[in-house]
Image (cartoon, rainbow, N blue to C red; front, side):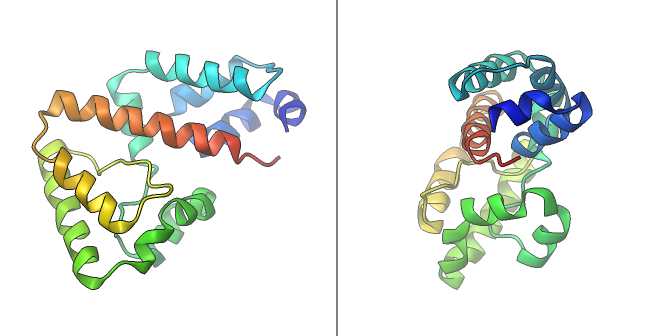
Length: 167
């Protein structure tokens, strides 16, 4: 996988990295950071470059995520390039009770109204109920604190997606 990633044309590499993180600035810098020798080097570069991106780059990355608890058909259309990953990351939502799904939807609406972007959480391994608890715990945060938490969650998601790359 790493050899194939290193051999890609720059624009192709940017597209591959953008599947892992929707920030075009981050993806571009990752493509420029090649060649990589190990997955560890990829992770280190990803973390270092993510730490350097600006607020608008982070918000751009957030727009590439489906809203947890949102309509599945709309998610498939909007996020076709990462649909399989998103579905796997949020698989427990499909098993949630109607009450939990409605609470997630309502919590997401409140979150977006307060912070201006969707609720970002690394959903892998979490039940819908756990995600709801996390959302409710984070809603009282200040915008500054919450932005840093959400940025950290994006980094976790990116790391998982980098590990899933298939070229």
